[in-house]
Length: 195
Figure 1 (cartoon, helix red, strand yellow):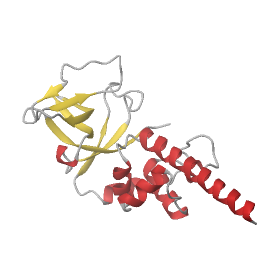
Figure 2 (tube, one colour; figure 1 turned 180 degrees about the vertical axis):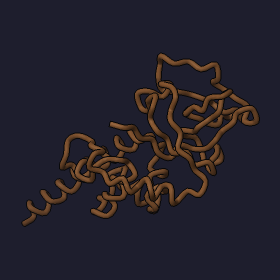
Figure 3 (cartoon, helix red, strand yellow; figure 1 turned 120 degrees about the horizontal axis):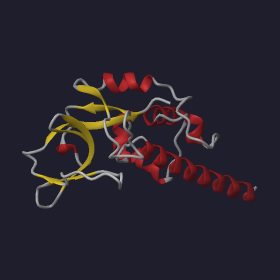
Figure 4 (cartoon, one colour; figure 1 turned 45 degrees about the horizontal axis):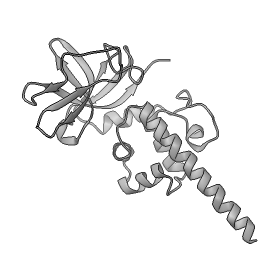
């Protein structure tokens, strides 16, 4: 009896670790900056979601469904029943819920490969126009001349905004900006691409 209990605990720990790894990889693939942001998008408590992402807690079916919808993967992938993260089986009703929860948002089409491989030319992004740098660092839509671009923005200690990208082949002239000189449209809250 005692060995069975130990085996069950060990299996539970392995499951929590697997789900935590899958949640983290899906979050990164979705371009979401943190577990806190996932919690906000799912309408869940931040501390509970951090427990799921760290492997301390095991999410139930309802939580897995919410995560799968926001992260655009199947619940089976998050639960460890599928090896590949497949968005084909994900319920796309999350797009409606994202739009319903944001009164001031818009979709844009990404027009360059500066954030590749995470975000590619032609991907779609939902921009929350009410979220600016006061919501913290992350992915933002900015306007440079006539172009709307997605970039990682972070506030520096000197009060400037650090502008960065993930594609090593890409270089912008803009790496640091005065907050008054940079036009920030809003925070990217969802990125998606056609298959």
